[in-house]
Length: 484
Image 1 (cartoon, rainbow, N blue to C red):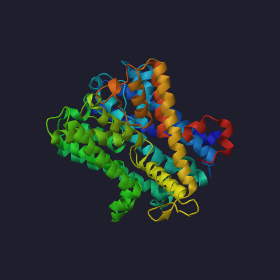
Image 2: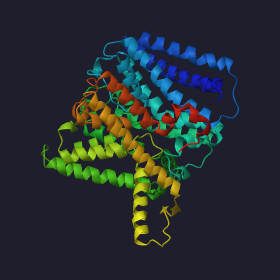
Image 3: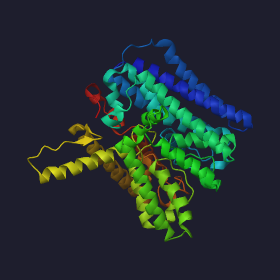
Image 4: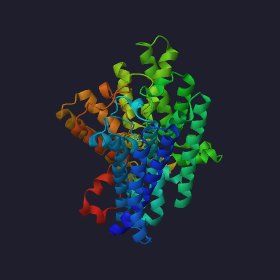
């Protein structure tokens, strides 16, 4: 492996982050707040270390699978580390552990926070939090694909476990064209939501930061009360619409925008995703109506928002779900585990794997009933290989094993079982809020330092689809690594 090539690409990542910091510094300058020099210093450091390898390392030709894995995973880790600089320089609640947690939460688009008073931060720093969502949401799609054209077969390292062959069939353009398509969809949705929120009465700063968080399915809000601050049905409706859209495979969205709208409903994964959300909302609304809410419309309003928020791994809040009935909380946990579709900015197991695994289980029942029969494994009239089904099942088992391990570690560190489990589920799914004190109206400040590092690692595992991060820390496996 050529480390100098890895450093060259990391230089591009540092420059990208520096530009984000400069953008936040511009906001700070406009509002004349105290974060201006902090953001400028951070940007200068990022630029210095970013430009250096570009000056001395020549442009490479082909990049191997190993180098591609190293570049992408190291880019996430380095970005998270660099993202701590503005927080540490600001001080306050930000010791290094808290700054690392907040930075990882931002880049992985998790949206969990250690802040007890978000609105006490200057607007420049709040905008930087939003920018980490913007970079993180685009990172795994746009940055990774920008590297893939030089990887050859290295695409499998990142996407074979995340995207089923059916999902990849919807994206048949060349890699460079793919980057442009995904960027257009991502930026276009961000601009559309910003405009829609401004029509609902939000100023440009609030509209833009919430759009960054929604399209990245992140959840950082510049308000302590999140979306509940506005107490507006119009704002909630706009956010819900864009949360749903952001949970759909971006290639299918592009196809729909291009006039092939039927492709959306033809996808079994999108159909399941939308129907699961619909019935989940209906059950939660009925359950809430029998509890704390005076009317079905009120229960539907708050139940729909919270379920869509966790079901797309966005993590905004309009109500305190920690006091909801057990059935509603159980459904929130399920959707926090599953989340939305592969090929979107959403985290979680993904609706695609749920569909494939359910289909595999049903096929196994049929095979037991007809042991001599030849039972095809198909979705949308297309054959699914045995490897795809096995990978989906293995990924879910690995995912749940990490949930169990992290939960047990947090309990051993003194976190109560509800917060340990729901916090872990929220972290690995990049959802944000759990239940209890880490719920939709709480924060993670009270979690121990060791617990925050465990949850940070869990966020990264979820955002990088587990295998890439695990293989990154097993150097002896690099030569033989070909993706899972």
